[in-house]
Amino acid sequence: MKMTMTQKILASHAGLDHVVPGQLIEAKLDLILGNDVTTPPAIDIFQKTCACGVFDRSKVALVPDHFTPNKDIKSAEHCKKIREFARDQKIENYFEVGDPKMGVEHVILPENGLVAPGDAIIGADSHTCTYGALGAFATGVGSTDLACAMATGQTWFRVPEAISFRLTGSFLPGVTGKDLILHIIGMIGVDGALYQSMEFSGPGVANLSMADRLTVCNMAIEAGGKNGIFPVDEQTIEYIKTFAPERYARGDYRIFEADEDAGYEKTIDIDLATVPLTVSFPHLPENTRVVGTFGEVKIDQVVIGSCTNGRLEDLRLAAEILSGQKVRKGVRCIILPGSQRVWKESLREGLLEIFADAGCIVSAPTCGPCLGGHMGILAEGERCVSTTNRNFVGRMGHPKSEVYLSGVPVAAASAVLGRIGAPSELSAEQ
Amino acid sequence: MNASGKVFKYGANVDTDVIIPARYLNTADPSELAKHCMEDIDATFVDRVSVGDIIVGGPNFGCGSSREHAPVAIKHSGISCVIAPSFARIFYRNAINMGLAILECAEAAEGIEDKDRVEVDFSTGVIHDLTNGKQFTAKPFPDFIRKIIEADGLVGYISGKIPECK
Image 1 (cartoon, rainbow over the protein chains, first blue to last red):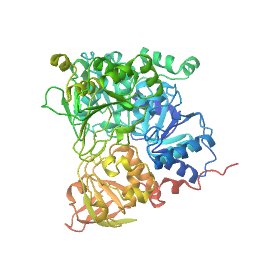
Image 2: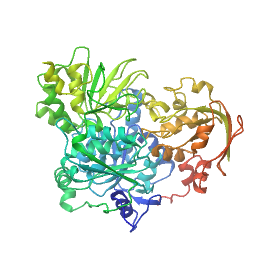
Image 3: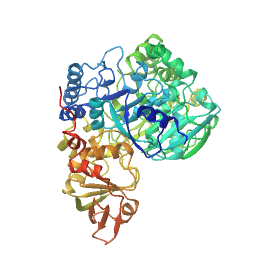
Image 4: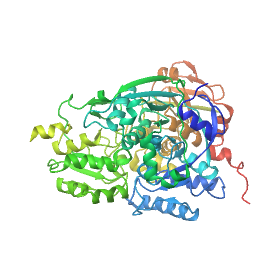
């Protein structure tokens, strides 16, 4: 019986030669993640289980990033609780505000060498599926699972079925990984991959940067997927050479390949050259439209950043478009570098100055407005184009506000246009 | 183990942001969370819900975030059971771990109307709509899941199973 890439990683972590879809397994974990929303309840649960301590202090990562720097007293109390737990448990991977390695969880874990091919990772955050970009199995869980996994180093899984996405060709100029994943969600729907793996393959993979792959896997959950995963290639190896040099040097990673005829539920072929600039209209990521095919949508705010699109490559793309331009009067453009490293590198490359000159505000690394936390909440009736991942009712503020999801080029161009539009429209307007 | 109550019916893709908006996630206190349950799609839910009531939703119920606060808010609002054709996977897992009963049954989700009175028998999976007399059968829980729910969640279920500290 053949196996998918995900099934092989799960089998290896369960100490089994073979697994089949639907099978319940207990698997050992390489990394367990919590943030400032999900960790406080997990700490209470952890204490109730009477565990003596975390199973391995190098394999737990605690990232206060959602309501940080703390927006109010309650969130400050939550972060204090995590800080004290991390200190008491001697957690090695705790990322304090201002630490050179700090930032938004799914930006910093790969950047700090905590993810490598073949790993099995759970995180009490739904976008934990991001790490599949590196050929790892990673999925989101809740606080109870986080607590029990911190105590035992393992968790149970139902082995998932999978959908295969075979990619060919390469993107047209200006199209990014964000357009690809929005395009896919528009095609299969927000439950199109429910309980399943989304496995990407084909010659088109080589034409996707690691930043693109991280963005694509990040939003697998938005199609209901358990995980998204890319095969390991030269770019992946280059990435871990740079960001996880110690693990690379030790050979502490494992490359799994899907079997040729693994039993996929279905196979979807996508020529990357056919992927258009895509925007998800309110209030579901599946409500996708092609840029240029809808009427004027005026906007009040633009957000560029998040675990989906807050990497250095994203900020470079934004700066390329915003350089020498001005944000339209009446529009707020908020830029959130995904990590302190991204922030510092953006400073060094002069990107922050470009943003300031264009009339944008640059925030500290935080999830902030993405989930309606702080740093850019919408009022009733306001519209925002955002490079984040969800546009549910009330996601970024008032229940009667609207979020339009897009890639970085469309978001940056829209900030200048004052309405949703493509970068190509900027030169046309001048 | 059974549930019995009046029905609150919602559509497809009820997401975790409407079940408990993120602006309230600066607390993890179940009774605080319950005060804002369903607020963004049904502002009067918390005033109308009584202990034992049942939510019936459309496909992909609970999609979105991994916040366990979502099943916690539903459970502590008094809801005894959620019935839907399918659940988002993290919500499904969290609901069981929190001891919130959930049943997958497309026919029931279709055939039950808002405000109907419904009874559920978890051991057989039988769902009985007392208002229109219709009966449906969901796949019953396996034993260990029923025990988790009876133990008020995974922690209650595993407590006592973790070895003593040396």
